[in-house]
Length: 129
Image 1: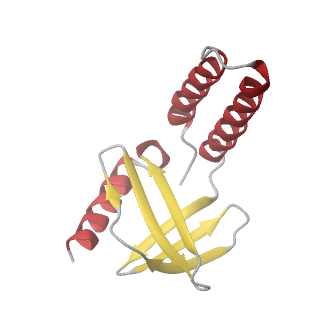
Image 2: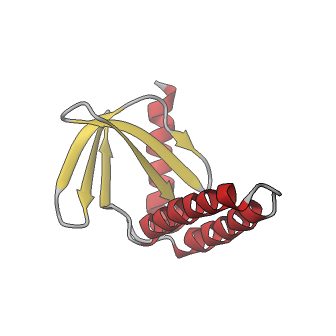
């Protein structure tokens, strides 16, 4: 899995719109500033995660998911619930060995086209079971 600069650009625009909305709502400045800081913080964190994703490798076999992190660490867990699959985005819930719930979001630009199609097909088959 690689970075998604297109989605990061879209999210940058949405963050700027949220920042404008924080100051264009007529609230007192003492309320607008914390809202603006929250928008900047959450938007920046999300943009950075799109440009430098936590997971660099992904494999799904049956009910298991295997991830490789940026530092080379490997995580294994079980799929949890029904995955969300669309032509642009895939959302996966899973639980690791310690049973902690996790989420993985994959945009189309983060994988090659054949790999993204294969991931969508595998997850749709998982959802039908």
